[in-house]
Image (tube, rainbow, N blue to C red; front, side):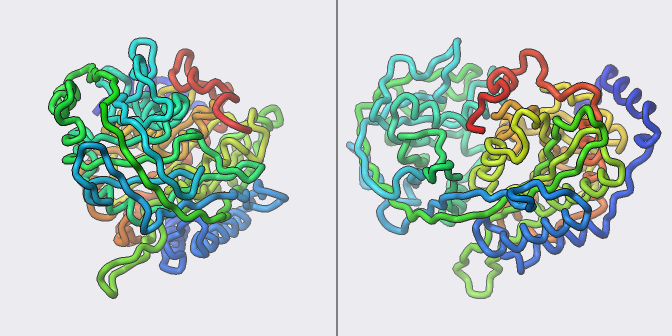
Length: 537
């Protein structure tokens, strides 16, 4: 693990010496943390799925905690709630089908699965299949060059070339649907390769997809928000189907796998000569599930128009049916993300005792599990002027199950907030480690990315792999993540107290910065999402 650089340590030391209050750890209220996690992950909350009564209960509880701490209501109409109008998309039991020319009949969930979009409840389409590799559109690499996607179904693979920054590769993956939609594609299917097998199994992916629902937020005119209008359906092909699909072509599955093992991972883009007929069917439901927002005013009159936004998603995945009678069906989500929300609430208490220079918004977000919906809505429709949102610090599922020794601050090194993060880690005797799993692209996979897309520099704080963390986190992810077993008993509250203290120190340091938080000059995300260009405000 990388140790903190000499320059960074010097910055941290100067910050520690500058203010006596920074010379010792804050007194985190461990009892309050345990109480909040226990309440939010209780069966009464019914798994906190967005749009359910369990989520409404959890939102009410968080609003009550904000009020008790003296935070000002910062939602709609003088309340703690920002209404988020949403469309829920549930896959229908019948009507989802895929047939590929020249291939044997295919079975949903065994050979493939498809998902309709929020734009059309059900329908059928038939179109040619066009392979586009990673779907990159870069000056040095254009996977759309020489192919026509208008009215076609795009075939893509997971991942990115090894010489592309992993966070940037994750950005390109997350925006691929928008790019193929711009090219006129009506559908997109993922060809399964060994790179994906290193992250998921087919059984786990389909098991999660069977019981999941999609959501998007609604525009002011009531139409569903979409980053990829015209793209009606997406899906994933089983490894065996992926191989059979490319069988007999000039560039076949073995060629694809071989190219995937190289550094540049270059694939040709081409029309496959095959076509596909896809049926998709969903049920649409209009729902509401609010973000919960409280505000702590700043102490410096010259910085009242610079808000630091702290976020943690409140929702989980709700109640999921089981085949065995008596099995636990309530997915309480203690680690995901009751600990994050509880930590944010405690940070609010600590900051309220010593108000920082800048005002701070505390946002418990809805529908993260449905695709970052609540944060996308809040980032695009903030309850304060958009240009006054200057920084985001996000918490999402810190696996506080062991005595950790290091933290990871995704995105911190991309902005002038980095020295503040270094100082906070030093204050708590923690190593600031690099991303131990860069291939996962976590910086673009949680709520901070919604603010990044609006031009706001962000930090996503997580726990590192030190002191046995790799094994402990691996155990949680393989056994308890998105399972009914994610219960409060898994939480090491001494570890959560330490994590909360570090989170407090980061938020405090950023809110007290002399200079406005800014992206570093030339940073990829800072240039890609210049302030105000990331979406609707």
